[in-house]
Image (cartoon, rainbow, N blue to C red):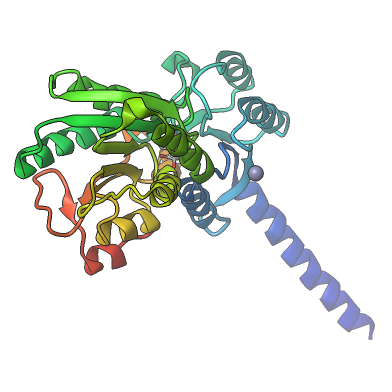
Length: 330
Ligand code: GZL
Ligand code: ZN
């Protein structure tokens, strides 16, 4: 009996040491995630949970900060207290980060800014991996210019439902789109309002647009993410306003999520500009480069494409088909 007990104890010790050893080898990552405001954000969070796994050598703590900068700063301070190996931040807005970035730097913890940008000096963090929102805005406007030429549309009377004001995604898409719009004397931006990247607020903003006689006759709606577009469609349906390839209003959206591309395939969304949420693989590769003391890129933009409804040929965008939709990962 004693021999069996000794054997069992020895086995428990072996497994316990292995567990401790492997726990010591895991790279601890604290991620102050923006929130869960959109399909895009949910896919982005899922991607980190799928990639920064123990099997890949990571111990990830992801905190959903409910789109609140203050909660994100608090989460970062907790990560500093816990002495994690790396901190990731997907900032709600781009301001107010200098103090906590300094605290992380003083604690010797590398910070990687992901998805959206901060306006802090690049010396305050280790690297940025995310989306180039300015280019997305330029792509959207260049496609509209191409489409107006193809269809012989004389003028664009544009309404814009913006993303969360102060988010670099909202700033970039607005500035990128306007950099082209400002060169077009037959384009008029009638209004541009914050829809906070959510379906509910997208609907509210669209309802207020539809009530304003100054905006009657608009023929282009730009939604700075797919969820806002779904809300805007509900509002236009209720008001009897037609949209999409067979309707009176051209809808340009951003994100190109599965639902967004489903609505592009059926022609309700005319053009959907992708913003790739699958960024965790690039973050994992960067951390492993840092761990191996190899050179690494300070700024990495993930690749974005654009998609248009069937029947539209474009040099800038992929025409949607069932196969294209089936091949989408998010
Ligand atoms: C873009 C990202 C934006 C998405 C929205 O990089 O920050 O936030 O476009 C999300 O869907 O809410
Ligand atoms: Zn919530």
